[in-house]
Image (tube, rainbow, N blue to C red):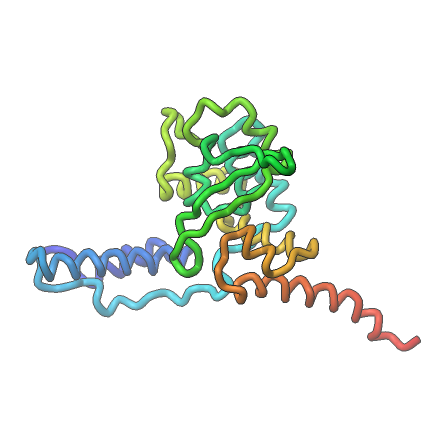
Length: 242
C-alpha cells in the first residue's frame, strides 16, 4: 500500500517533544517523495503534502543555565568523551557540526602572542555560508586536549573514528539524558556562551567574530538582552522614593 499521509503524520508526532526536529523530518520526507514522484518515477503521490508542521518555539533551543552546566559536569567526569565534548563547546562556542571535525590540525601558535589558537572554517552560519573562526585556546580546554595530538579529531567514537554531525548530536543528547537534562541540547551551550560573553561586556562585533555570525542583528539579540538586564538592575532602585 505504501506510505500515506497518516503515516507521515505519525512519524512527525514521534518527535512532538522537539518541534524543530519533527518539522525537519516532514521536510526531508517531502523532499524524498518529490524526487520519487519526479525524475525517479517511483511514486505518483507525495504523502507528506498537507501534513502540517508544528509551531516551533521562537526562542529555539533551550539556553543552558549555570546550574545545568554544573549538573552535566558533575555526572560526566573529566576524562570522559561527554565532558570533553561539553568543554569544547563551552570554551569555543562552536556548533556541533564543527565540534565533530575539530582536531589537532586546527591548532597553531600565534607568533605575536605565543598563545595556542584554533582556526576552523565553519560548516555554516545563519546565511548558510562558511566563515573562519580564529580564537585563542582557553586554558581549561588546552589542558583537556593535552596528549590528544595523535587523534584526527578530539572527539572520537569508541572505535577511534570521527563522529558524523548527526551521530555526535545524537550522542550528546544521550549524554544530556544520562545527566538528567533531557530538555538540553548541544546548541543550547553555544547560546549560553553568547549570553555569558554579552553580559561580560562583549560587543556585537566581538560576538560576530567569536560565533561566526554574519548578521549584526543576530549578535544584537544578545547584547540588547545584556543591556536590558543591566538597566533593570540599575533602574530598580529608582522605584522607591528617596
